[in-house]
Length: 622
Image 1 (cartoon, one colour):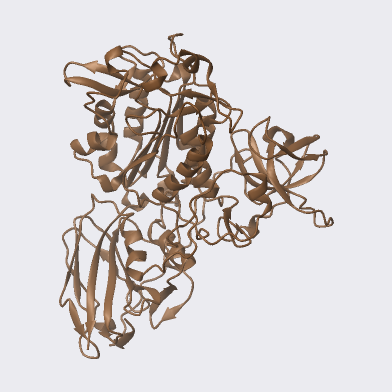
Image 2 (cartoon, one colour):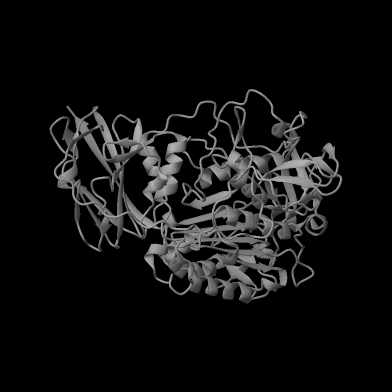
């Protein structure tokens, strides 16, 4: 749609909202991608996060390094970055303890889009430092050893704690909102108590990330009529096993409040070959692709349930939806299918966690050129890495990550490099040979409808928005756009349009002529209003509208000042879609003092990022 406006006398504009100071939580020695570090002692630049990995270069004390990422006690850096030296740059890993984190120089401005592509290669180098948000929460549970000495240890679960923390930070969870339960702290009753406390802390429209790393198990439950799956807490026994059914019950209140609940289990529920391979269960098995010893993340409780048969509860999402939760609002990642074994690497952590972390922070590729990385794209990237890690193993095949619920969920909005052809090897590809996501040579052009659908998929399905068109077909040059909006919650209406020309995205409402976008519960508003009528102007085709009702207002000043009449426009490319997506999914007021205060933010919708949404298609005809 192009615009033909019938402008009547403009109404008085609403005053602009007062400027807000963004409060950033500064953590000690926070790693900022692009920061210039220096080595504090002679060290070695290695090809991977492993003490036995290939040495790429020996570094003397005082060498400058450009930080790309910090993960699990290791730091991904670019060496040879001194401006007065012409030495070639090389990328690799050094131990975090060998660099000076207090170096003052920063090169953050070079990270324009949050990640960088090297040349025309779809490799990405770091996640942009994004401000923590008070409405984000995380519970990170890791069990590397158990009270019962007969239960095999999982040394990598301690590293998973660091990895899960980095995932939480990428999702803008502040350190003060991250709760940890590690080893003896993670008893069954402690986990239950932590979930109860989290339930009380979470407010309407908040977002929650729960990560569990430890053993999964199965046991016979006569009530369920067979074997049920459970997470094995530190203490084991009847109180130390938490089934998916129990977990879903404990999460019911949280799912009723959250905008999105993201749960990841780095555990498996299948014994399989591990039952007989006692040496694997106790000492670990060496995989030829790596020096890290692998251990199955399964502990058998009863013989009849050690193999994947007669299973009654297989999926947290199934149990959660049985309690009334909506699949749109839940993301559940399991390390493996219900009949597979997943593995713990004692030096790097669980394969599922370390590779999901790497893909979320750096390596996932925007396969559909949508402007953001979805959970499914992260999963695909991580699966490639698992496949490579387990390639040619004489005992085990790769386990398969399982993603249930909202696969289109975007955990963090920042522009990403799209998938492009790789024609020239680069230092990172040579230095860090870990696989990246499948590379598409020519990603299909994203239609305006799909661009809006990506934002539609981020909606909170518990918020209901109804949109009705006066006419679903408009005659070009004659008919005007007309539709009504109703919501089951009070909020702020935003309308984005992908025109029939498929060249641009427009923020149709609010606009320069009409800033009154507040809506009350059950109120019906008609749009466009009389002073900014929009007449169909072609070309022939379909206009797609995304109508959102957000709990809190959005800051429109963050969009570029591209205008089509009184409307803000954004190019339908990856960068434009990323900017629009970040705007529409982020509350303007969540950083104000009332939201930062624990007491005043309770039941305050202005502290919520959540929104309901509906899509509307209008056909333009001759």
